[in-house]
Image (cartoon, rainbow, N blue to C red):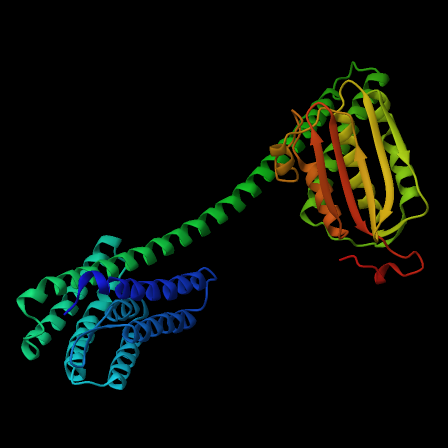
Length: 432
């Protein structure tokens, strides 16, 4: 019979085989495979485990072997269904026949009784019941398999099932039952975790959408409310023409602000480029600097541009300007007490490198990680929409952004674009 401790390593090896194949099976489940493919995978995992367990088994008598073959057989039958159970039964019996020995018929009887038990128990297992009930069904079948094996050995090989070997057999039975229960619990836990992670991903997407929607709603409502108020004031007959013109001017500014917010949102939502052309960056940066110079002057910020020889990229001029204007405005607003904004342009290893460095308040590593995510801004009243637009446009132009920042010393944004040849057509450039 079994020498418990010397043969324990063989049983552990059997468990290792089963665990390996079912772990691979669970990894495939994460890919949301088709149900038919799922049945095939559970058949392959269980069948391979059965063959390996029977190959590395413990001899207990002439032509008699004991191993963990029924663990993958029971698990595969429960999760694969009746057809898989029948196929696994054929594998088990065929391979046992190939091993030879007088114990084949004993094994055939025990396996057949186990198959019959599984045939009636599988529909109960497949019903939408809780884990406790599933484990109870599994335990019943596991004990039945042990009972069939023990009864067959006692009837036909009484010398093997002597009193001194009974304890070893009971230990083996408990190891087999516990192994089956643990594997079922492991599979159920993995499936529940997979379902939970799927729900969390859906929730995160909905949360991001709701945060962006709340941001847009809040930002658009403010200028519209102000515009409505000034339009109501225009109904006052006592207003002077100068006051009316002032109210109209303020209302138009507020409407322009709302339109700008909506434009930023649309740019973030659909960052694809439409009118692609070859842009000479020295000229473009000069034009962008003129746009932000008034804002820089109001905040006592000096803008310095380091130019180089002609460098070209492929992109849409309007969106490129929008990207750089948003970035430079953020840098200027990060210097409330004034400072210096340094813009450098160069070409390195086929890449156009634009650096925008300020001497502002700087950011922590956590803030840098969250840049470009919905509804995150380092400004008190910011929405984070402008930064999302920056990242979206750079991505649409096949570029990338790197950020380096230190609290109290400033922030440096490095943008890399593929350099292009000005002699080529824009449609020939590597822009998606």
